[in-house]
View 1 (cartoon, rainbow, N blue to C red):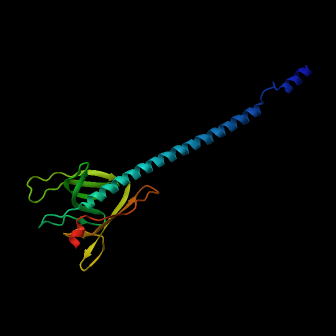
View 2 (view 1 turned 135 degrees about the vertical axis):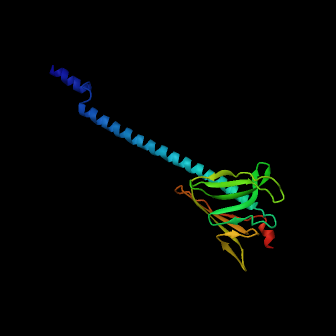
Amino acid sequence: MTKDRTHARCSGDAGFTLLEIIVVTLVFALLSTALWQGSAVGVRGWALEQKTFEHMSDLQGMDDTLRRIVTRSELSDPGLPPAFTGANDRLSLISWLPQQEGYAHEIEAGIGVDAKHRLVLRWRPYRRARCAGAEQAFHEEVLARDIQAISFSYYGRKESYHGWQSNWSRQELPLLVRIHIVTMTPGVQWPDMLIHPSLSGAESS
């Protein structure tokens, strides 16, 4: 009988001890936990990257729209208040709404950030003084979300000199409009927009 027990130990048929099984189980559990945490971090990182990409796409669309609208700024009819009026945090103007076929509709529009941190464009078809008919209601379009603040500044003549101003309310257009955007997304900064209204050069000469 002693010979049989010795043969079993030498041949490896005795199996694992309870301690060995516990150690293997513990190691497996630790590896599984580490792998799960790594996967969770990877998923969160991917989701954050996707959100950042979508936000940057929204900002690019916002940039394109603002540049087109401000570039196509128009003057008001003679005898009417200035068509282009701006404060530090909002802008009102007459412009053209871009469409696939070109600038098809003349509009009066307002741009600003609302209480939900959305950059909003409010517009309606512009009715010239010589055109009869009832004024239409404003449409509202969201250009970008998660916007903390927007600031406008205007470069043009003020009395006897030219300089940057935080407000604009003149019959002529500013030579340049600078738009600064502050986003709420960490690590996302959008470069300032410097826009030249196309009619301003002719007026200043």
